[in-house]
Image 1 (cartoon, rainbow, N blue to C red):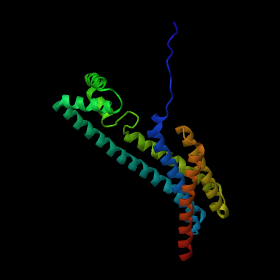
Image 2 (cartoon, rainbow, N blue to C red):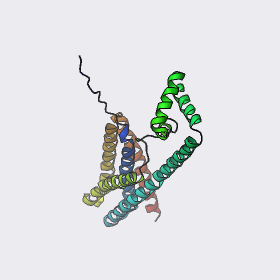
Image 3 (cartoon, rainbow, N blue to C red):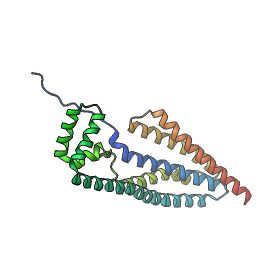
Length: 233
C-alpha cells in the first residue's frame, strides 16, 4: 500500500496585511524625507538646517503613519464587527433562510443543488457565523483588520525608510548633498520595490521600476518647488 504523504503548499497571501503596511511605510519614509531634503536644500538652506528638518520629518511622519494606519484599519475592523453582529442577528431570527442563502452561494459556485444544501447544512451545524462570514461576507483570517499591527508596521518601516536619506545627508558634503540624496534615494526605492515584489511573489522588475519612477517624480517636483521659492526669496 502506498503511504499517504501530506501535500504542502506555500502561499504568499498571508503576507498581504503586513507587507502592504511595511512597503507603504518604507516607501513613504524614503520619498517624503528625500523630497523634503531636496526641497529645503534647493531653496538654499544650510547643511545643519537640512539635517534638522529631515530628522523632524522622520519623527512627524512616523507618528502620522502610525495614527493614520490605526484609525483607517480600525474603521475597517468596526465595519467588519458591525456586519458580523448583523449576520448573527439574522441567523438567530431566521436560520432556515440563512441556510438557503448559503446553499445558493455554493450552488452558484458549481455544486449541484442537493450537494449545496448538504454542505450548507453541515457548515451551519459546525459554525454558522463562520460560514456566513467567510462565504457570504468574504471575511477571512488573511484579510482581517489588525489596527495595532498595521500601525506599528507602518511607523517602524517609515522610520527605517526615512533614516536612509538622513544618513546620506549626515555624511554628504553640502556641495554634493542634492546629487547624493537623489541618487541614493532612487537606489533605495529600487531596492524596496524589488524586495517587496520578491516577498510577494510578483515580477521583480515591475516592482522595481514602479516604485523608483514615482519616487523620482515626487522628488523632482519637490526639488523644483524648493528651487522656485528659494529664488523668489
